[in-house]
Image (cartoon, rainbow, N blue to C red; front, side):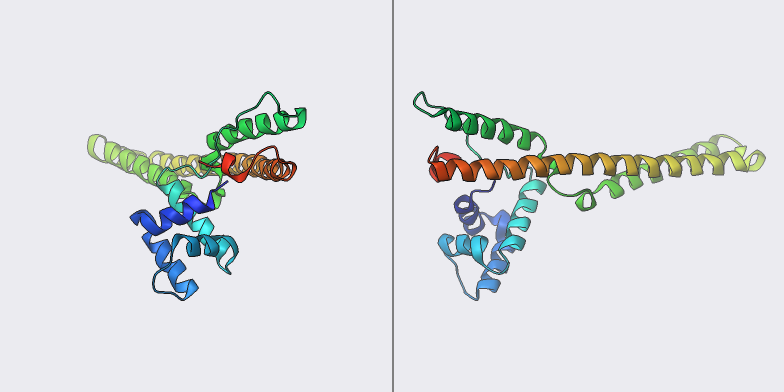
Length: 200
């Protein structure tokens, strides 16, 4: 749900996308590209999908929404089909924004890093507490190493649960996204709204 015209303008003018701009320039074989040429690269060049994916990723990392749909205005003279399409697209746009952090697959997330860091921190805290303030290391070493094992098992189970939850929500996001694209195409074809009505 990215407005290619807006994306091209931002890639051309916003320093946030400078690396992406350089890659597009290299792909297109030019020295300096206009916003229109960048839009062409995003739309129908060999690397279009890769460029769009990187644009979306930069937005996600910068907490900028990739769901750039405007709220469609339902008119009194709209047909029942157009009313249904507009209301459904508006609802789906809000649902997609709410689920946007699940737009990328779980393997593209940093769950392993922050859950692993948490496990290491807990083991470090256990080690320091028992090593500095007790003699449990000498008296009951199996208790210490057992607690390490428990932390590792907990972290692994938590990681798997988090990844599974993310994948379920990612599939839900993809389903809504796909249906919304169909509704957008249907609305454009039937004349319920124009491209200008859709994007911010």
